[in-house]
Picture 1 (cartoon, rainbow, N blue to C red):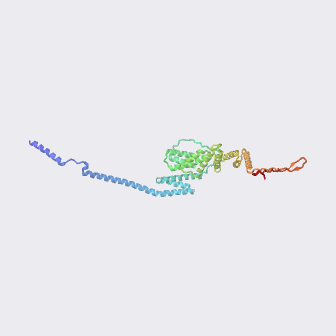
Picture 2: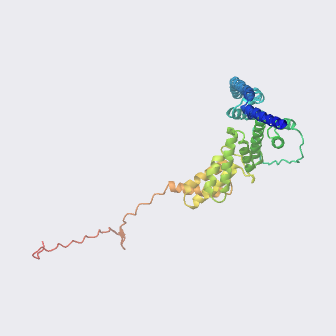
Picture 3: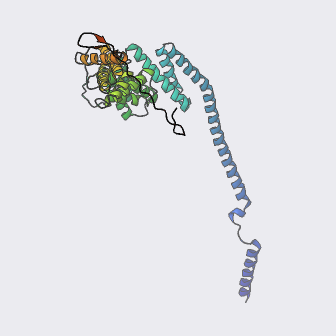
Length: 378
């Protein structure tokens, strides 16, 4: 009995102790857990503040660097522009190279475009002063190529292209720069654009003036225009070439249009020619003769004479000379008409004995007078 009572007493005491302790607290209900969370949050805030402050500091340094770089860049651009105007092309190129190599990360898109255009102009002026503009040649010269794989690096290709341009080897320069672009499109972009502009511009002019390849020449000038605006010489040449092509398209179709277009071209580029090897001057001369013949056939002799005169002023043409003489005579007759002779005066009538009897004037017949109302005439 005693043991049973002792066991029951022990069980009751255990139950009472458990009730007095209560349920076990969860982690977030403990005070120590909140302290730990607060410490973690403080650490995270400090870390975030440090990162933000570092980024802000970097941005501030970048903005300060750009602010300080902008006046230097603009000063060098203006100096390069003045060097170009005064003929110091090497100095201008040095300034532009410094901008592209030292300040490229601070250039805006507008400044980069401006530097690229100036660089192209400087290269063009440098090569133009070293090389006279080619003149039209009656003998076409077709370059012969033997393409071979080029495994050189970007720097070697770039230097080779500059050497080709200095030697006026425009085809090789374009080919080398195209290989360079295929190898590394990001390599010295502005420099490569400037070299391509010079090579394509000069190759287009050579094709038009020296080879008579008008369409390929215009195509090269149009490609060059993608890198920088064409200069006055190249733009004017492209304009006259297009007029030549338009006039030639009317050949033997509409002589009036032929004369209209070639009358504009031949005073500026008398030896400009196409694949037919016929110069603008010769096309105008022939067109003027043909158009003059058309006008003469339509009876417009004086206007026809003017076109024959212009054609003969370029060179004599024994075949067209008789027509030109006939047209000139017809025009003179129109401008100086022969007066009509006066009507002949009346002559006396001769009789058999030789006496002359003056011609009698016809006697006028009296006009009858009408009767009045009473039937009596006056």
